[in-house]
Length: 82
Image (cartoon, rainbow, N blue to C red; front, top):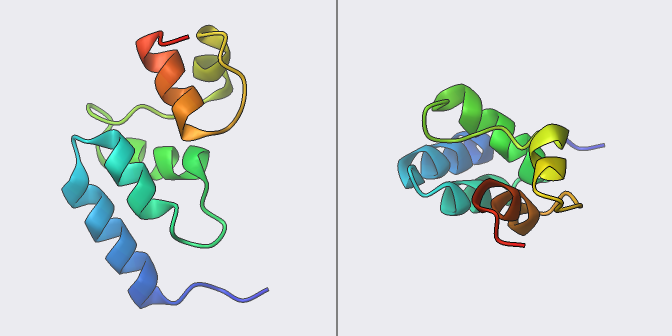
C-alpha cells in the first residue's frame, strides 16, 4: 500500500480548512485523498472546527433515517431532507 505524501495531505487539508464554514466543500476537498471518505473527512473537520463541522457518526446517520456512508446522507441527517 502506498502512502500519501506530506505535500498532498497538507494541500488538501489547507484547502478544506479554508472552505469552512461550507462543510460540503470542505469534505470534498479532503476526499480527494486516497483512503479518505466522507466519514473520515468529517472527523478531521470536527477536530479542527467542532463548532462548525459535526462528525459523521453512525448515530447522526441513523437519526435522520438516512442510511449509507455518503456525504449527501450525512447532509440528509443533519438537515432532515429525507
